[in-house]
Structure formats: structure tokens, C-alpha cells
Image 1 (cartoon, one colour):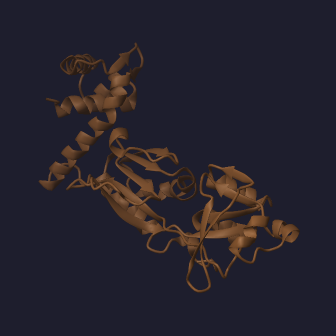
Image 2 (cartoon, helix red, strand yellow; image 1 turned 120 degrees about the vertical axis):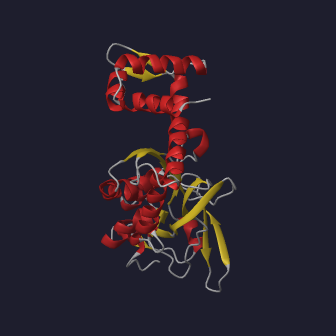
Image 3 (cartoon, rainbow, N blue to C red; image 1 turned 180 degrees about the vertical axis):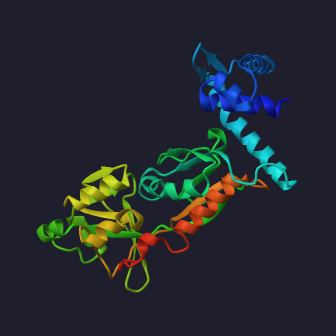
Length: 304
């Protein structure tokens, strides 16, 4: 049986990197904190913290326990709130997973607004284009493009993930404009990762799937966008990634008679708990408020 006071002490030591600092935070003596930690480790049968005279760092077992300890403390806070007790303001560490380019362009620049609203929430963000395991990684929430296929999670729609075919004016001056998807065979095409099957809607509403042979493939959307701006070829880009370049004329939309088809949507994913911790609920609401239902990056774009 885990004691919530012991979990709270462990989490504070992990955050502050010091048993003495955690003791001050909890208004107990360092000797008491050290003794409680040692007793907690003994009950678990695992060493959680490496101790030195000045610092406390987590062991491998400690790092594995930390996200779950934070999650248990969050559940306790939700239970207290349900009874009208405990802190009313959202607080604690919020662990977020998000795609790299989208996080850099649209989440991180807006975080000052969120932290000003909720100063007691501390953010721990993992940005990666790999799909992380929310439970295994101890994440509270994730932003994803992929549709939800696991009933143990809830998906809330953030915004459409629209795509547009683009090239720079310099490239088009040298190589001309494609007039149909088949014309892409004679052009240099730039692919984001493995996305080389480009789908269009024909003039009669038919679906046209065109597999291109990329002259350049990069596993990062911003890098592909920059390559297109540099005149290296034609790229299929998300509007959230290329909107500013389209507005400035650094990129030009192509194949207007053959609009691209995207089946992807931006979602926020979270575990299907009956009650959400306040810090999770306000972050999800903030994302929805900021990005949906029609995202700001698409406003005024002729291609949408």
C-alpha cells in the first residue's frame, strides 16, 4: 500500500532535486524527510533516489515511478475537489506529448498565455513525431493527427488538418506549372517522411491517388517547407505549416482544379478517466479554444 504523503515527498524530491529543499517545502526536517524516504524505499523494495551531500537524483526505478506517482496524486486531488475540498485552482505537473513541428509552430509560442492563466500548472512536454504510449510514458494528454483506435482513450477534435500542393515562384518560373496530378511525374517532388501517396479530387468528384517519386524526402515538415521555399521542388504541405509562406507569396498553391484530399484531423487524446484532473481539463479546453473549430492559420487562405 502506497501512502500519499510518501508519494508527495518523493515527487517533491524529484522536482526540487534535493531532500532538504523538499523537506522545507513540506515543513519537516531534512532528517525526517530522509528517514521517510528510506522507509518508503524499503517497503517498495527499490532504491528510488541517489543521495549526495547536495543533490538527490532519481534512479532508474525512481524515473519509472515518477509519472505514476504524479498521476496518483492528481487522482487524489480530483477526489478532494469532488467533495469540495482541496485547491480549486489547477496545479501540478502536466505531461504533454505533441508532434514536433506543430508543437514548435503553434503550441509553444502560445504557452505564455496558458501559463499566465494557470500559473500553478508546470508543463513537461515531449515533442516527437513518433506516437508515444500515454500510459507507459505517464502522459496526461497528447496532440495527434491519427484517428483514435483505442477505446481506453478519449479523442476531442481540435481542427481539420488541411493539405495544399505548393512550390516557390522561382521553381515554377524554371519548370512551369503542373496542370494535373499526372504532370507531377515530370517535376521534382518533396515528401514529408513516407507520405508519397498524394490524393486529389478530380473535376467530376472522383478520387485520384498519385504516388510520386520524391527527389528529396525529409522526416520533418518544416524542413520540407523550407526546401520548397528554396526552389527545390513541389511539396504537399499542411496549411498549419505553410500558411505564412503562402500569405507572403514565398509559396504558391498549385492544381486548383484538383484540390488535395486529407483524411487527417488534429485531435487531443487523453485517458478515459471518469473525472479529469483540473490541470488536464483546462489545458484541453485551452487547446480547443485556441485552435478550433476553424483554425486561425487557415483564415484568409484561398486554398482552404
